[in-house]
Structure formats: C-alpha cells, structure tokens
Length: 446
Image (tube, rainbow, N blue to C red; front, top):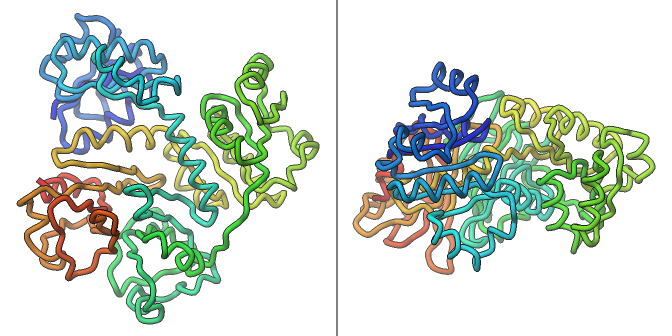
C-alpha cells in the first residue's frame, strides 16, 4: 500500500516506523529538517521537508497514487486542509487528527466527507476511553473489549500469591476445568512469547488473556488480584488528555484536577461542570496532602512530562493510592514503568496507531489494539466467504508463527478458540500477532 503521512513530531514518526515494518511504501512530509534527517537515517522510506498544505509538496509526495493519506500534525486545521487537498489530488482514503471532541460526533461526519476527510481520529479521546475502561476494571493492567463487550482482552500482572503461579497452562486447565479463557501472550523480562501448554506462569509475568464477560471474575482471582471500588480520583495535568478524561468521569466520580497554568485552570473551571479545579503545581506533595491524597482511590498523571507522570504515580503509591495510571509518551520508558509498581501505562502514539493501522489491512478489521510495552497487536477480523480461515478447524489451519487465535464472535454469541472450532463466514475472530506475522494473518482472512 502507498501511504503518505503528514506530521510534525513523534506521532507521525511512530506511524511511519510501524507501517514501514509492515512493508508499505511510506512517504512522510514534515516541516522540521532535523526530524527528516532522523527519519532518512533510520527508516527505509521517502522523507520530504515541507508544508503539507502546499499543493506542490503533496504532488512531490506522489499523493495522486496514495492509497491512504494520514495527517497527524498538532494543528487540526492543517490536518483537515491536508486531508481535503490530498483527496482532491487523488488519495483514495484520508484520515485527519483532530482535537475538538465536537468533530467526532456522527452527525458531523458528513461535513468532513464533503471536505474530503474520510475519517477523523482524536488521540486524547481514545486515551480518555482507555482510562475510563481501566477504572471500571480495576484489577486489569490493560483492557480492551471486542464486539461491544462480547470478548475481552485482559492484561494482568501475576502476583506472588496468584493461584496459577508456578503452574503450566496445562496444569491450570486441569485444575480449573470450569474456566473459559485463552492465554495469548506472556511478557517476561522484556521478551514476549506466545505460550504453549507446557509453558509455566511465574510471578510478575504480564499475561495477556482473552475471556468472555462471564470469565472476568475468575480471571481476576487466578491472577491474585482484587477489584477496588473507585469513587475519588485525583488528576494532575489539565491538558487535552486530563480535560477529556475529567469530562468523561465527572458525572459518576468525584474528580479533583490540579493544573499549574492559571489561565488554563480558569478555562477548565468553565468547561468542567462537576470537577474541582485546583490551581497549583501537580508535583507539590504538600498540595496533595491538603487535597487528601491518602483518601484517593485512583491517581491519574497526564502532564506533558513522562518523567513527572511516572514519578508522581510512584509517590501516590507510597501514600496508599490503590490505582495509578500514567501517560508515558516516551515508548522506551513503558517497559520500565510497568515493572516498578505503576498499575497502568497509556500512550497516545500507540492509541493513534491502533485506530489507523486497520485502514492498511486488506482483510476487514473491525477493531485493533496496539499493546503498550510490547511490540504486538490484537485485531478483530471478519472472516470472508471462502477465505482460508474458514476452510478447516483451527487445529488444522496454518497459523503463522508469532500469531494465535484467541476467540470468536458469532452473532450474539462468543467463543474461546479451541482446536476443533470451525470458523465460519462473517465470524469475528480475535487474533494476537507479533509484527512479523501480521500480513500472513491478513492473508488468512482474504
């Protein structure tokens, strides 16, 4: 696929890196010469320095032959203009990053379509949804649902007291015959493996598991975790993520938000109806104590500094806060952060990639999740008529190395994948895959 990416920083660069690994033809347009030099020295793609709203620049990027144009600059106006121009120049599909939540409303989609923008994506809204899900399922380190909650992907860090610790997956299946779930990956000491029956689970493993709604409670107990009731939440950072998160949570929870910038604090006070806005330094421990940090059920750090977010969450843990969530934009920090006591890590670049990557697949993909901390993805494919995936039972399929089928949704019912299961046309199939296997998996569904 020929893809043009217009960016002005890390989001565009991350997308270029991810998509280049999947053997697409990538052209990146960026106004910053230093980033262009960095891209050209590390990634096999074409890089053009320039303004993406320039017709000549878009022509030089060969936009007329683009299967997909993605504009993810920080200025949403530039993104909308870039996508519109790209469509007029011949791009088959265009995606624009936006910041205004109003633009995401379905009623406004027709306006964007008329302007040449096929889809809009708001990383801040996606991240806010992830935070909301994590507060609803407090035992999970990461959670994602498929087909409106018919299947769930859980990431749980095994505790020392977990009933499944130091047992193989075969032993777990024998000891807990009533369970209905499938382990699709184990992340241990910086490495990810797709487990087999004789692989052992050990404390501190990060386990990715596909389960049906009815299996959630059992899964939590087996991981040695307990649910925590969330009512009082402290957020530090009133930027786009903090503001959007507070808006989503304030109707049901007691929210306090600390913002250092006075003008922004006043704007937040006008925007948020049921959130207490506190003007102050979010790193000020004395301020935390004045705002009853020990009485908080959850602490969310979403400032512009990954270091501040990580250290703040660790400090909140010392005060006894049960649930901590940190926005970590430096991807190299994610693995470290997951292993030093922070409950959940979120990343806007990975969240944005989760939305966009589905448009690069030949098969029909209804959901995709780029996982934090590991270079892997979980996708929900639709099985097409006569595709290879429908021809044999799962145990007889040639599933690529580095991939595993976790579950299937058929109509209103969901199923955990077992060897004898026969996938049918229009089934939705949840697949965990490492990057090197994704296109081989894609071909199974065509």
